[in-house]
Picture 1 (cartoon, helix red, strand yellow):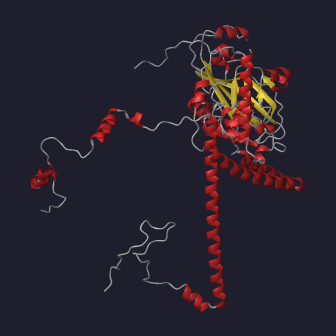
Picture 2 (spheres, rainbow over the protein chains, first blue to last red):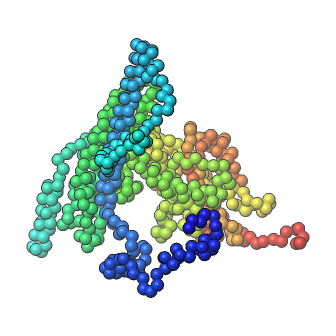
Picture 3 (tube, rainbow over the protein chains, first blue to last red):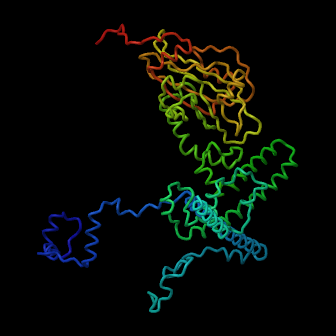
Length: 149
Length: 384
């Protein structure tokens, strides 16, 4: 029986007594954890939260500086990769721009066509947005388009 | 005796063979000290071995002094191999920076206008910082060795020390200056440029002999001799800058006006300092003190029942040499003094004093006579 969400809680509980009865379990609770898991859970519940934290790494001065140096190098490496990517994109944009300028000079008609607004043309929702990595499920074998008539 | 000797020999042989095994073959810019200053080197050979190559598992890291803890220490997995790669990468980057510096230096030799020379010198300093700021030896020196032993003529050390100063000491100083209302009671504000440290080296007790934390309440005996003042510049100072230092007490009781007046306790002017020679200590005062001092040091001696008094030390950077006439100690106007002599405040320090049992001793020493004892007086207005 469907009831709207706006009804007060007490009236909802009264009217859906069947639901409460369904969740109610008389007698000893049966959990689906194994005995060994239960033991570990009990042991952990007796410990304070600070004891459950992973142990702090006590590094000596040499290793702390080594760690810092490794982080520095990794940051440098990442920055270089980023710069390379940025440069590549800049070059690509420049190339597109030059090609379009060339087209404008040689054939203004084609340039107009290439720049025409494409009304109603949208990116198909079913198509995957281009990403850096392949999807987890690369190919859908039983695929059928939605509105095929 | 014999046993001990042979034992020692075995130990040294082990270390030698170990270091031979783990010596890296690379020789980059960071291991070449023909062009770079030797102060960028890590001095302890044991620590250097552990840092740049590998910590000897039989000896443990040299930075840990406790023998048992040293033996129980384990480095994280693969840290040495990863560090080696990281070091190579960063060193290559530093080499590029040093090549750039050489180009700038060539341009500096040909430069004519002063503007260009200034620009080139600044660029070279910046590149020198960039080339060394990730050098593990430099990082280790700044982090774990005595700061006072660092070579402050190196731009990289000054850069790292400035970062350290801004992260803690500067914040403490500014907090105390504002909370104790030294700003704006003496001067309107401060744009801090230098690290000012003060200590009273005549003290034997360690409690008072160390650098004074800004805002500390000190007893009169602890300040009875002129302080040692360290003024650390972080920018490059080529020829010595001139500094003036003024110590004022804005809390001298003024009974006539039922208020307070400012007293000049100590005045120094035309003190030449640079990045390395940055301390005004007893020996300097002995040899050249008469040239600098325009007002002799007189410690604060708060009288009984007077409130806690602030000793406000202001450091000014001079644009030219000053010629100061006779300046009265009482009713000193520090704002007028600064504006008349065209001085810009670059640093400050503060400590406090109140009446204690050593005040009378210090008063006698400076010939100040017996101090007054203050008491509350009922006002003329009727009590409602």
